[in-house]
Image (cartoon, rainbow, N blue to C red; front, top):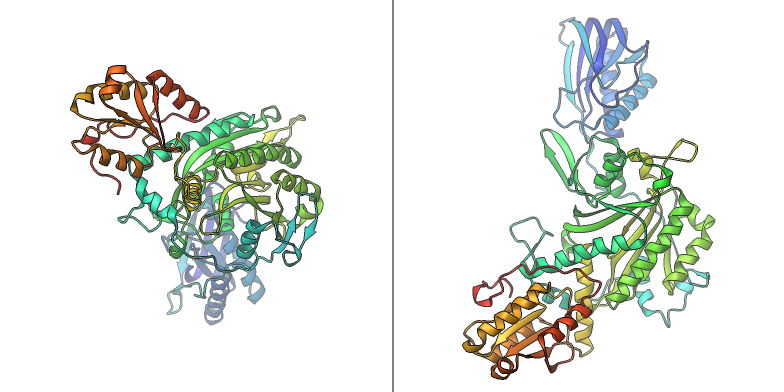
Length: 611
């Protein structure tokens, strides 16, 4: 906080026009003022100001007042003493706190000019040595402390039985025990080599060393995987049976906007902040900011509900450096964020059950099962216990439930779905939340049957998780396959190269390209290994890249116009006609997006972009 005190023989001001979007209210009492022998306190509220700075500033003002002996004190908001301004709503809070504190401490009347208005003023200074003083009030530096939230933990079974974690029998629920150990007891996780990191490197999912820690880069193979998952996430969002609108927007939002500031405070200390033109911005940590900023401008009827809004949002979280993990814990990632607007809590619960079923369906398609952590408010736990049990019954597995006091977060229910990875660690992938606070915070309304405005209840969900975390789950599944003695692989729709065509010699190259072009025209990713190296090396390198289908073409294949197809999953070789092979590819990729190759067809024209 910056203050400039002037002992004035006379001081007067008059409100002229609005300076910010939501200024303090003006009335007959504060729209103008005339004062004699007054201490005028020009005040600039800065971004870091708090109760500490208010207390110190009030003490300083009282001290000056006692020395110069004015008849009154006038607080005058003045934004020109600093470039590190607090957002308007926060400045109003701090100024009102300073006014209240001074009014209690001061022995003379205290007045305050309204914040957020352009005002004219006239001032005549006495000119004695203490008539002009300036001070900078700095927030006291103390060790950062997160607010302590007391959680009560329970195990709730699909039958509705409730246990404390120490009383539950984990004999047949070892995966739940892993989650409980981490979330309830904070026990250290097992170490060891994570094969997922090795697989990431294989496909070009890497850290970017020339950026901030926790930022990834994606080679052409990796970019294909990311794009395929991104398109699939949109496909999944549209499969829920409610209308969904896809939007795009910015990733940077001004902290002076009250809803942005309040939402940021709820998120905590993992924010990326950027300063531009003396304004502070927060980089979004999901699609919430952009979608909510749009939705407040939409004209919505109860007839439109429920409907969803979707974006694959570049998202930023300032995770601790020591916790960063390729494809899992990142500082910049892509979030396929879906928000579904519903009329009320009852409808939100109904739609959430549809979301939950889809979350489990996607896990099963990936060959996994989720273990759930339900974060719920105390009032939801007490008043909607039957609903909670219905959700857990649909999970078909006991869940860990964390109960927190109401009014801390914007949600009443926040479900995290975890896999237990190849190192026996819980890893959150998918999620959904029931949000009762942000529609009012951002001013999102709909018109009900009576023509009145109401605030919708919003479901937040990432049905498949973030793009990178979904990829982590797929690669972790491959790690489990390898651990079990199976051949690790990717689903065909995600394999960067779905088919590699290998001509045995130069005489077979033309046929190889004709086969590859037909496969490409059908929408599958294919390349041709036309390099001048041995057939054995070509096949080995295809295996290193986990190419699902290797087509080897020699004299017999050329003569019979057939394909010698090697199948990675079964390690078998079969002879097929080209149309038969394409039909196999179609069936295996049915229900998944087709993404074009992000690389030339010819391997002889490709640099080495993975290792």
